[in-house]
Image (cartoon, rainbow over all chains, first blue to last red; front, side, top):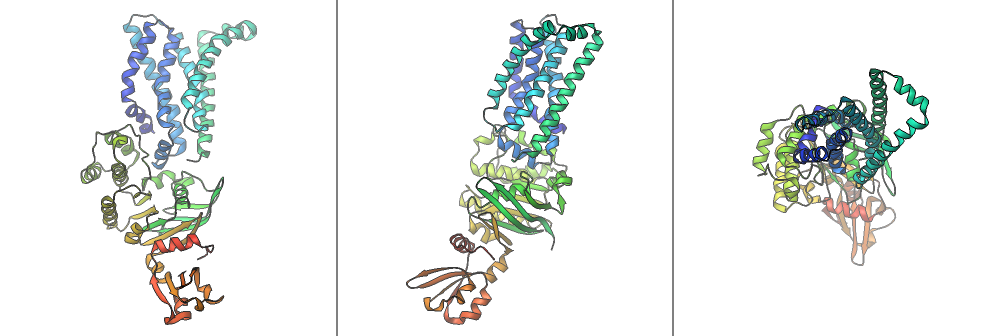
Length: 201
Length: 289
């Protein structure tokens, strides 16, 4: 399983070189920390799908002594591992460039990443390869748009919910937030496993 | 004799194509050649052996084990070579080895390096920059480096030049010195199989029509030539397929003994090559053996 996760580093060695200027660009452009964290986290896991969407790769992985359950699990666990690394790295860069950032922003960025991953990962297992990256790009910007507009809308119109959330202590807010994201992520994991196990290669 | 692979009543249907009720046995310690025209169902059958496809009905057992409960144990013991390159085409062999090697408990670096040397493979060149023959050698080197008991190959000789094809067949024979090893490989080039296969499995239009040892095939199958007057409703039953011409008939039999009993010396009998068998069965409407 660990080998499957490590595979992404071997595959993306060259992409890593683009990673640093890519993140620097976001930092220099003075984007919000939340967005920078989100984009940095997306980098490796979604590139991985770009490599893995080819039919041949699925034949290779499934001919090696791995089960389909493990192949899917490595994607979901790998995404968390690479997210943690990306967050660490981004924080380091922010620190070096003397930009202030809060734990809240990082938590929201990571939460958004997990949420987005949970939404899109099953798509990779459903559709045939070819234009998946386009689908993901479109859904990413749609996702950002919704996040930017829907949240303020909900806060304004569903004041009871908003008040409930506001009344929680910071710790409780973190707890509720992470539990929601986690259960969503797990449900997505389960769905992907079921889909992939039925797939003909 | 022990079966390494057993397919029992395996059926898989696609739109406009199906593999029907396949009963196939692959014997331990031998080379089984899997013949059939393009599109006959060879790759589909191999995919079911590898658990890439699940049969609609029937049972697939490898090493006597079931994929449902022992998927990893089975795959640990299989080396695979496919028609096309399945390895990341942008990576070189060194990186591919780093990905594949840790997947196997029995991976042997020394053995891998031996094959790299023997096949003259470049470690630092991207897969996509290698010729088709080189890609096949690379797949083979990877397939052979974890002491696999069963080597499954889908059309490994397609696209190889004649010299390397010969070398490749020699290598397969060399691998068989290990009596525990089994090779199953598909090909539509029948001369490859004539040369090295111990058993022949022949698939046609999704049906397995022959699964016999090469000796049995030689004993039972023959091309029979004779005069047209010899043919009537009864005598024709000895043949799988008959082709008539003004000068006489030419037919394929799968029951040489019966032909000898019926016709004796009045006909000319020639050995049937795999190609003959394939050709006659393809033309014929009779699929039963």
